[in-house]
Image 1 (tube, rainbow, N blue to C red):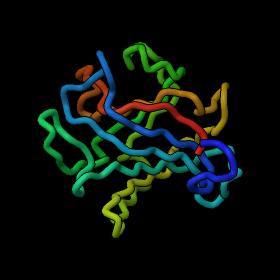
Image 2 (cartoon, one colour):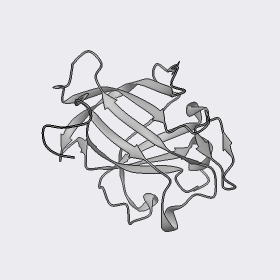
Image 3 (tube, rainbow, N blue to C red):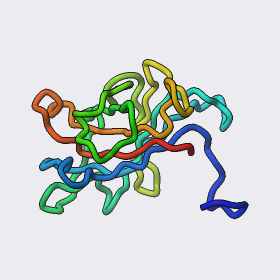
Length: 167
């Protein structure tokens, strides 16, 4: 949406809306949906550097993802790894796109906030700050892929992916 009637003010930083991979990239393991925000809590909306990443799951009935049968279950975000790729091409399999940055939710400072709205956020302090910009080391326009930590070595398909945009 464009124009002066935006539904909410910009929070600054960058945002990737994560959904289950499509086509050949689809994982046989449970998929993950939600938003991943890259931000610097104390810098305000004008910061061009992200020091934190916050995952907010898309919750249905208090759960974070669905398995292949459609059943919902709780997820421990410490079991997942995030990769930010060199390009924004979602048509190629994830393993064919080089990764520029990666982090796990087990790394850094983890806080889980259960809010009355039934949303469970997982926030970490990134070990390496990320540039919020286009080109160079910037993360805007790049593909984001999420894998189960145990599945990376096994060549497992991603459980979620999206593209980073301005928030």
